[in-house]
Amino acid sequence: MGPSELEGFITQFGKEHYRTIQILRWLYQKGVTSFDEMTNLSKKFRQELDQISFISSLHPLQVEESKDGTKKFLFQLEDGNRIESVLIPDKNRLTLCLSTQVGCAMGCRFCLTGKMGLKRDLKVSEILNQILAVRETLTDKNPITNIVLMGMGEPLANYQNTLKAIELMRHPEAFRFSSRRVTLSTAGLFPELELLSKENISFRLAISLNASDEETRSYLMPINRHSPLAKLLEICRNIPLQRRSRITFEYVLIDGINDSLLDAKRLLRILRGIPSKVNLIPLNEAPGIPFRRPSEEKVRKFQEILLVGGLTAIVRISKGADISAACGQLQGKWPS
Image (cartoon, rainbow, N blue to C red):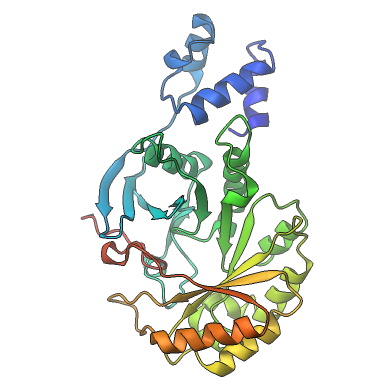
């Protein structure tokens, strides 16, 4: 339940508004799994809640740890489906990458998750329980600092549940993440992105771009055939951003496909006028992905063109490749 739903739910018991705040704190700040633990609620109220509702939870089926410290968590859902979350340590940050769907329908050619196809959307509880379950494995001295919705699935294809989950991530009585610490990554679905552009966006937005022309993007990302690049960029230009905010454009560099100097110059041109930065991600090679990673020299020259042209361009080296947890590599290997 979202905050307003929870408040409406407890009014049937004749309870005051502040009880909503108490329950939110118990659920998301303290992470309790039973009503009995909510000790500042009356025993009668706790029994009434227990009779008609329950607190859901997730428990890791398997945890893999990379040599670089990245951890991949495999969770089994109530219906037997499985999803993955990735915890990424980096200097002063600890980022948790969340799934929003079981599998993915986008079919991007450089992504292993897309090969699974889409099985179903995740419920709000299943998105949020990934945070609670991973947090349970950590010490208070090493808390999760950032959330990115770029694990299994396309977040905007599960629009309502994803936005409701983000509301609770940011709520001051729930998870309390700031808007600058939550990032939603999308391939650019229409009309969901247009709908999002009309709302007050309270999180960071990342667009999976991966090409600077229509033909190449359609080859790499089938979504581009009905949600073309030109229209995507037009929508991005009209998205109302918070002060000093920028859209992040993610660009997976693939040898001989989208990594030429012409591609870099064209990318510079098409992003002109959009408050943005570019994350350059050299391809994570894996069995089943029919592409190669470009050389470090090609990556450096590509970045240099963007920097000289006035764009902020950062080369991101994805972690966890040895456990199939790097960008585009999530896949369930647990026996079915």
